[in-house]
Length: 480
Image (cartoon, rainbow, N blue to C red; front, side, top):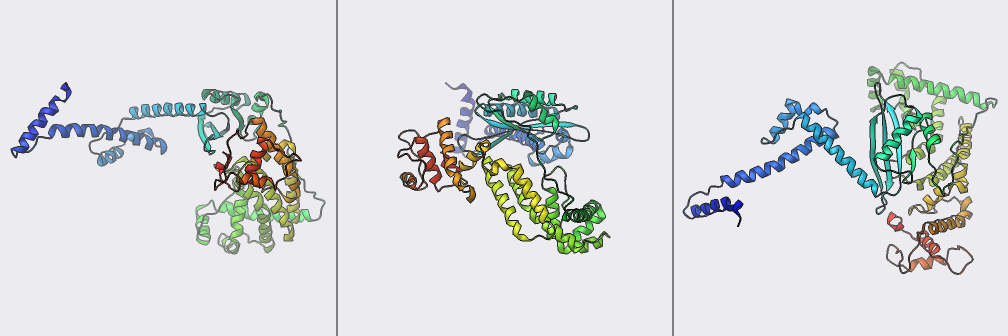
């Protein structure tokens, strides 16, 4: 019945008979077979680990040809072999194709997403990178994938950028209905493709993207401004000399002896880098005299150090806000409005600090901030999406609304109701949400204290949004 097992059966009988007679069993065949099967599994796993080591560590493909690497692998696993460079190339290509296929399958299930695009250059080459981001339908967690990192030769004209982006989007089956937005920097060659070729989906109002950024100009005729400018230039000039010195090995060693850490230096392509650099120096104010003496650099005057302290104190709310809003994984659009109002509040609170040098700087920053974000700070209709993002975040809801705008709660609630009705996001008959302790009746208790309208009855959308706003839980699961 089972001829393939006959040899094993015959050997088993010999082993049993031999054992009864006190003879050692002949297990050579079994051991060879088991060892062979185990070796195949072990070799397959080893190959996977080698590919992962080369790819994740960005090691050269020639790694598998190095004698020391081969000795390492065979020393750890004497019966295993190391694949050739050619085999490694084939395996990496296969894994790449498999990864692309899995990303495409994942994106097929995603209704809406946002992409990002950036171009950067080294001394010899240029590259374009594209990523995609969305919120998982079930877990509500942010998901991200890398779509491309490609060689992108010059010239980086707007039409070539448009062609490459369209090619990448098409390769992954991303339609313009699926892509809600693409985030780029504001260089002209990136801005122009979207002005020339962008698609506006019907039913959505086309917004004017040509709004100019306004600046607050400091009037040099005001007596305080020329002196402030001179003080700023003198102070930052000395710090620039210090930062330049920190790039020289001998000076860096002397700095390390005093500070016990490396000096942060400004980078023009990194937000907050100037603030971070000045803030570090301000925290080391007591050591700056010793540092400048050791490096034979001009020492700081007390007025310059006082100016540094006031400057960093005023810029701190903006710097912290920028760090929050450029969060990698936990920052949602819901945080924008609360962050803007927090910055305004913190800047307003600084008025009582009686700055000696930077009071006019504080006023200029406040004027510029309010001018730039006036639509958000006044909760105008064009920022309704930002409003909805904030009030539908379980942790935020309406807690961010400042006292002077508390009268707008009714309008915001009506906006929620209308949006819920428009999207069909209303509670079905016979279903209900529950609070943390499972008491579904809590909702109806809360509605007695919340005035929505003069009507005695409410729609499903009104009841659902009221229930959400009164729910004390702050977890994302509340959105279910």
